[in-house]
Amino acid sequence: GCVTIVDSILRGRHEREQSVYRRLLIPNIPIPGAQSTGSGSHVHGMRTLMLFRHGKSDWTGDYTSDHDRPLAPRGREAADRMGRFIAKVGAVPDVAATSTALRARETLDLAVRSGEWSCHLREGKDLYESSAETVLGGVRAEPEETGSLMLVGHEPTWSGVLSLLVGGGAFRF
Picture 1 (cartoon, rainbow, N blue to C red):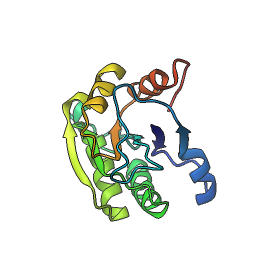
Picture 2 (cartoon, helix red, strand yellow):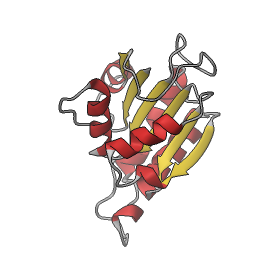
Picture 3 (cartoon, rainbow, N blue to C red):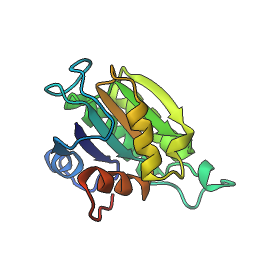
Picture 4 (cartoon, rainbow, N blue to C red):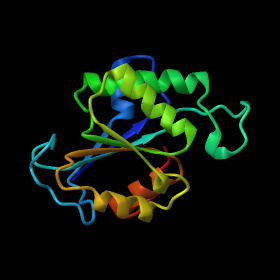
């Protein structure tokens, strides 16, 4: 399998710097229980998992719960840029699943619209306040015909998923 890490907080000024910093490919990391089928948009027959952290959220906004916290203007801009960038490098996923949290849904919506992605979209309750093990269970359950899967969600879950996939270590998005 192949894991792509997408962090929507763009700190670099140049697109080349952003691409190096934001798109980390870790080839040949087996995703437990996931099988390569050679269909869809597989890269050389590998299935691809992309972890996309939601954009910067608005801590000062008017919201009633963490689940309802929106994106900050900076997060909206970053999600918009990432959508265009992902389309430009030809990395639009077959399926994009987002956490039900408002900031994650907004991140995916902005990325899809700005990049003019054509992919299947869905929301997953198991991507909000979930464990890395739960997320990987969902990845394992993904139909074989899904060549590339993007998950839009949160920290510290994404760091935990990456740690499980590479056999340990500390990671921070």
